[in-house]
Amino acid sequence: MVDKKPSVKRNPRVTPRKEPDPGVAAGPTSASQWRRASSGGTPIRVPSGNVALLKRPGLQAFLAQGMVPNSLMGYVTAALKSGTKPKTEDLDLSPEMMRDMMTLVDAVVCQACVEPRVAPVPTDAKGQQLTPEYREQSILYVDEVDIEDKMFIFNYSVGGTADVDSFREESATAMDNVS
Image (cartoon, rainbow, N blue to C red):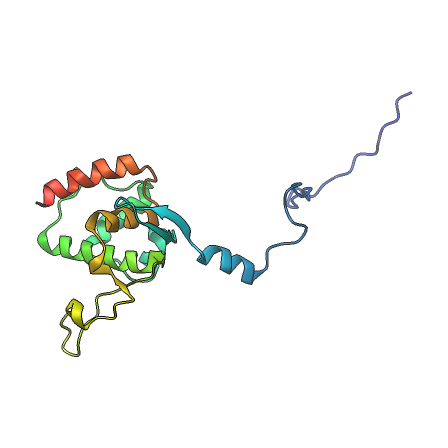
């Protein structure tokens, strides 16, 4: 006779406990460890050859913070719904939308760069941009970052392609269209 183990009925709403992976620590990650790991950034070489520690918060984070100008909202929501970025040839940007896009790119670069820290362009009491001789020399300002590096950082931080060659081809086409 074959011994049968009594069958145990499991509640289908309860997920069975999994055995821990052998390479995983015994306890869960603490909030401070999690925060420290996610805020540190990843070293990325940008097209100029410089290396920056970059965060990758994704487009949703910038949308939630209200950083996306209204003129670009249609493109952004379409990209979020489709899960892909719009092709440069499909973009029909007015001069106002181009200004808004560059403002968004600058804001994203400032937030994505952990090291070196990139700061917005400083202004005086009248809102005029300070010229380089009146700026803090130890700070890298966003207008001192090459456009190709800015676009690369933007694409990386909003979850765009990680393929540098693909980025370079697309950005060259986009820059030709702007010129």
